Image (cartoon, rainbow, N blue to C red):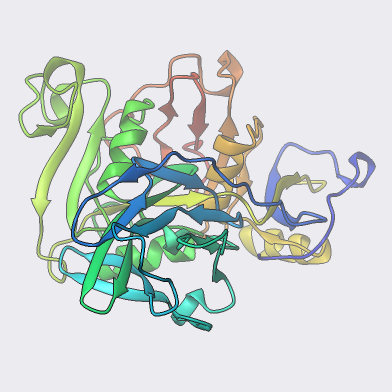
Length: 374
């Protein structure tokens, strides 16, 4: 959260043509949601673990149950000596400890302390309750059940509702190493997107002609409308269904993360507050915007916060405002002629890539006016 204040009333806003974007906290935190998931039985040894097929879905700040149940093929076994362990897959061959339980002894690790606990819904329930879900919680989790020399594991994938947004700093495109891209996303209230998240965003209409880093160290970009400057019309190098003439996700593969420089594709989820526009009596420089925000008990919104408000809360405003990285943008849910046109298109040669407009299946657009320089 970047501020802690209730929303302003309509009479408290100043009327003018230039706005300042702020983020103010909601009066109460949004309650988490639990998903009902069917289970799938595995078979290996005396211990049999059941986990969720597909994935479970939550959002930042929510509560989710990672389903896992177990039983023994022999009815004589008890549950007292069972060891339950949850780990997160951080790399194909690397795991991070999340939670472990042996009888009455329970322990959570790292950032999961105080947030993770067993559901405990009767014998054989190893399901993990995860509260106050964070962006970093996205990924695959392994549930391992061990009884003496017998064990079995199951996998659960946790997905988050959110939005993928392309990002580059004020210095221009293709300026970020992999580590710098990670920091840039964090500074804008996000994390580097996964390849799966980028592909889902492409299926939802994301079209972006600049290549960017993803979480696994690969460099890709989504093309919904094939054209010569964006990999051509033949679809060479596209990944996933719908490549070729209908577009696709262009993939540069895994790049040298300390030497090569690209943009970033970031991901963010549910807002920890509310984005709104503050309209001063006259246009203000960025420093004046920060002071105006502070006077209202808020802070200048970050790029990821505005994208989340546009995508998840359908924020629609045809007034440009400053953001925390020094850019000026405005969110459009319903495209219209006076707000950038009804059919946003790729920018002409020489236009700052930050001015590119996107369009989703809902024909929603996110605009940056060319005149908004800082």
